Length: 165
Image 1 (cartoon, rainbow, N blue to C red):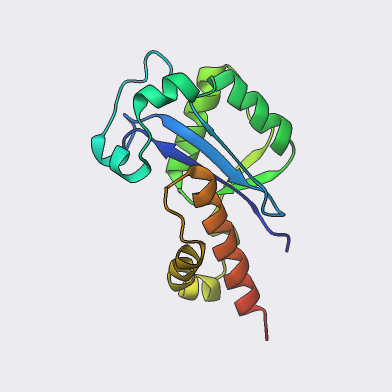
Image 2: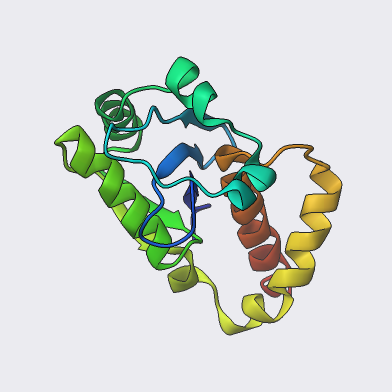
């Protein structure tokens, strides 16, 4: 089994009202990429509790965020033909669809649920392993690429532990 490419998206608010504010991934060899998303004019829902988690201000998105067409093109260029996994269940699909729909584009990669490649023995040690990795990395800010890297490293360590026999 190859190390999965993992993608994560941070949102402005939970649920369907929110929109993607940051997208990032961790590639097979651990190299990551991350970008802020400049909100579309109709994207207005903003939840302050989400801001407290990711510390990304809406003004920062306007100034430093890339447009949805730029991000869609970059993701397609870098992930073309790959299966890319998300830990966010339906939320990952929804946010990615929002981003690509706003860009007027289609993903050139397949998005899949990370749970598809997590075995039952991996699931049993997943949460403790994830906490351990978060402590080891001691990341000070919640970033989409960091969330992707944490999920990827958790998958890798649980896979190695289960198959160490």
